[in-house]
Length: 351
Image 1: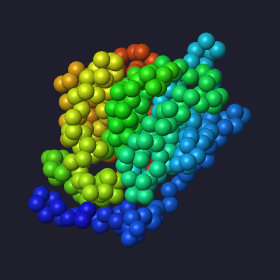
Image 2: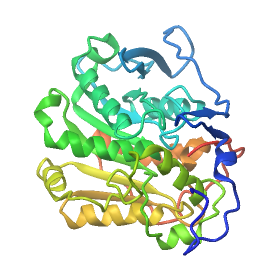
Image 3: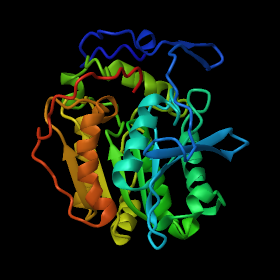
Image 4: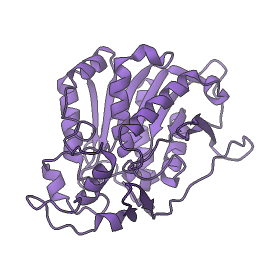
């Protein structure tokens, strides 16, 4: 069971199903009890907004779609904007691109970075276990390269494509990157430059020090993380599956291709995130294999997905990312820098 790990784990402070407001049915489906606040898209150019948004279908067979974010101020005719493909979080179980915290974060990215953002939906587990989300995420990339959608064809520089995701979306961005680097010609004219793994969600059977120490972390309790994996991984597998544990399986070939193509990988993590050890380990392995690595790891006060809940902190992160998209140097602050009084925090109900 997701709540029981008697060898190392402290006593759970939360019932995982109640924490997520999930009811699991005998047929393997779930009832999702959380009412997530969704923001409608607004394509109206006359609205006094820094960003216009539009929802477009991607794959009618799987009922997937994407939300596009375009800065309202158009660039000069001879200037094209970089493209960020962003995958939302939610533990593979919850959420969509319309969820308030992801909508607001993507809107801020488009405005502050001067980029077009495409945030695709994907099928959710446990009704659609992994690799369904990876397949949908990859299909969204193929859709981007072939669509005649005018918001993408007019003004986007497809040679500057960045894959990004938060939490479970960071896991998806990583696995899509592994797949995409194996067949880059299949995505032309898209040219991926960087993977930005924002608080990426990884795990494994053997607990790390941070997972034990922060087992009952209120933002991401470890027994809740275990339940996400229990419901999302292929039936009959465990947390040492390569979808969950980035150190599992043979990845040297993909990493070598990333190095050859001169991809950069940015890993963002917080010291109060139970999965921080997994994130640091992946960053160290990538760097050891010659990949251009940037680690943005905060101090002990920084928690899982904090930039989605405190948009003032999101602005600080985007300032650090701006140099990647626009060719400048990336400023890396010392751990713990950038802690400001951000006022009211927004509530986060899922990973």
